[in-house]
Structure formats: structure tokens, C-alpha cells
Amino acid sequence: MEPQNVREPVAMEEGADLLRFSTCGSVDDGKSTLIGRLLYDTKSIFEDQLQHVEDVSRRRGDEYTNLALLTDGLRAEREQGITIDVAYRYFATPRRKFIIADTPGHIQYTRNMVTGASTANLAIVLVDARKGLVEQSRRHSFIASLLRIPHIVFAVNKMDLVDFREARFREIESEFRNFASKLDVQDIAFIPVSALKGDNVVERSENMPWYKGSPLLHHLETVHIASDRNLIDVRFPVQWVIRPQSESAEHRDYRGYAGQVAGGVLKKGDEVMALPSGFTSRIARIDTFDGPVDEAFAPASVTVHLETNLDVSRGDMLCRPANKPMVGQDLDAMVCWMSDQPLTARSRLAIKHTTRWVRAMVTNLQYKLDMNTLHREDGVTQFGLNDIGRVQLRTTAPLFYDEYRRNRTTGSFLLVDESTNQTVGAGMLLSEPR
Image 1 (spheres, rainbow, N blue to C red):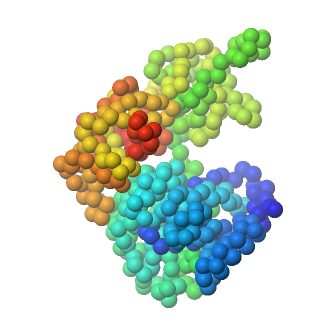
Image 2 (image 1 turned 45 degrees about the vertical axis):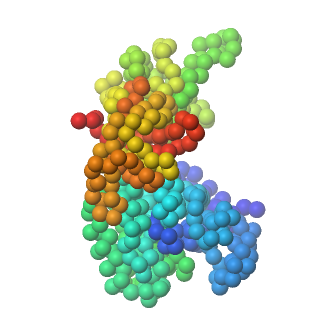
Image 3 (image 1 turned 180 degrees about the vertical axis):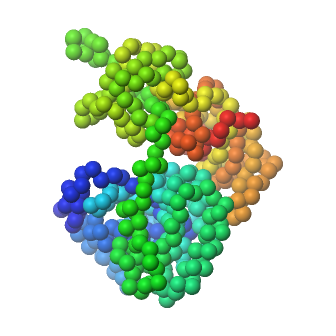
């Protein structure tokens, strides 16, 4: 069975661009309900899915169809009525396609929130109109800022429980603006909504005639994201070297470098440099799954062919000779620690950066951030679960990187415990260490 209206709108505009957004905020602020409302009101769910949600809602004794169940897919989530893991959902309108990451609100699942928001173009921070700004609201807003999510929407939810009063919305808006002034965010919007009732989610609310702005879906459809990408600095981390698979004349000279464009625009005929060797060549051809193209930009996955065969391996990077990334082994970074085992100075870990794996040692814990005040706590000896702070690292081999604020792909990395192969931290690289 097809979704009720997905096929037709998508067919109307196959070239519609893609917006990735995450929902975050405190526990029980209505994140899953909001996503359920978006899916329901845009008719982007299957009839049998809706029937199942209605049946589960009745068994739970709910007086209404609990749309949060559309995203809370784990059994533990449904039983407890909370979000634990990141749930991804997809829908489309004639203007744009969307990927939604529904992230948990509980503090112990902050690491899940970081995972869901790491690739987002926009973050929706939900706030309970009755409670206003709480610790998790601050924490998630700061993490969104730290992750350099360029657009943030503060959705003041449950306006129906405060009688849709403008005064309450303005009070929360003022409080958030004061807090947001400490954050590094380019674009902020405030929208009063009721996810349960559908006010200002897809259609403008008749209960809040004082609100003159766009409903949430219209904002998501029209927010400008084209300029968020870095189209200046050419960065192409090599994921795989494709060599000849046979001695036939057709395949004998085939040699390509496959990967995902991380920045800039690759064009046929452009001169590129391979790092770390420093040798240069020109792009002879760019292949995609659908055939050759004249140019490619992030986040396209392509195979690049060079005019001359260079010694290029997995983990190497192609860039412009006059526009190279930073190259170094001493790294300065902000780290979100995601393990129950504390991070301490002298800790040894593996780093996954673009397509490159290296080993590293923590040389210094500079400070930890207080999520409520954003003040720095100096002199710390360890980071615990969900702590965020600044560290210095020394790697066994150089990384080719940019500052995170300039390129979110080449400026980020994962920390992995080699003994368990578990991801224990996520990092954002800063400028060259002082």
C-alpha cells in the first residue's frame, strides 16, 4: 500500500532539495508527537500504520490517537512513553524532501541526541509552554550551536495548555533570546505550536491570531540552506581505490578514486593535489552511479579519475594545490564524551576522521563546560558520560582537517575504544593549537 500522498507530490518536483532536521529538547516536551503530527497532517503515513497506532492508543487507555507512537518504535519506548534511541523518518512535500531525526530528551541519552543532530541542517528545540527554559533545553540548544547547525527553531509547544496566551509565548521567547545570545547560531526562529492539536504545525492556528509568522511546515519548506554548504574548499577524502578487475583492453587502464565529496566543487580538468604525497594531476573524468558528470559537490558520492596515476590510498585526500587543509598530529578539539568509562589525560584511543583511521593519546584536558551557565570548569581530571569540553590530542599520523566551523565533515571525528570497538566520543576540531 502506498503512503496516502507521498508519490504525487514527490513526482511533482523530482529536483526538490533535501532538508535534514532533528527535534530536541527536554523530556515530555512533545518531540515525537510533533513529528507524528507532521507525518499525519501531510498524509505521509500508511493506513495500516495509523490503524496500529490507534489500536495501541486504545489499549493504553489514551483518550486520543497518540501520534508519538509513529516514531517511538522500540518496545521499551512504547511501554515507558519515552524516546530512547534516535528514530529517523522521511516525508516529502512539493517543495522539499525531509529526513527527520527524533532524538531523546533524557539527559542519559545526550549521546543519542548528538548522533541524531550531527548531520542536521536545522534543529527544532521544543519547549513546554508551561515549564519554559529548563536544563535540557539549554543543553540541547548549546549542543546544536556546538555542532554548527546553522538554523534553529524554538517551538513553544503545548500552547493549548496555557490557553494560547501571547504573553506566555513572549515571555519564553525573551528568555530564550537572552540565552541564545551566548550561542553561535546564524538563524533563529520562534513558533508557538500545539503538536497534539495541530496548531501552527502544518496549518496556521485560528487559536493564535496574534502570531503573524509562518507555521512550522512552511518554515521548514522555505528556510534557505543552499548557502550552508562549503563550496569553496575542495576536499575529497578517498574511500576506495578502484583498480582494474581484468586484463581486457576495456579495464586495463581503469583506475579511479571513490568517495564522498566533503567540500568545494570538483570539475573535469581541474588541477588537484593528493595528500600526503603532495603530487598533483588533473581530473580526467568524474563518474557517478548514473554515469559521468562534468562537476560534483558535497555530498555527492563519485569516482574521480586522474590524468596520471598517482600513489593514492584509502584515507588520502584530494584538494586544490593553492587551498590545502591543515595537516597536523597535535589537535585541539571540543569533545562530547559518550562512555560510562571516564576520559582522562593519557587515555589512548582510535580516531576515525573522514576515511582515515589513526591512533591517538589525550595529552591534556583543558576544561569542561557547565551546561546551565556555559561557564568553563578548569582543572578537571576527567570527563564523565555526556560531559563536553576541550581537549588536546596527539595522533600517530597526520590528519588532513579544517576547523569544524568551516567544514563539518573534515572538522569532525569519532573516538573509538580499540578494546571494545565502541564509539566513546565525538569531536569537533578547532583551529591549529596555540
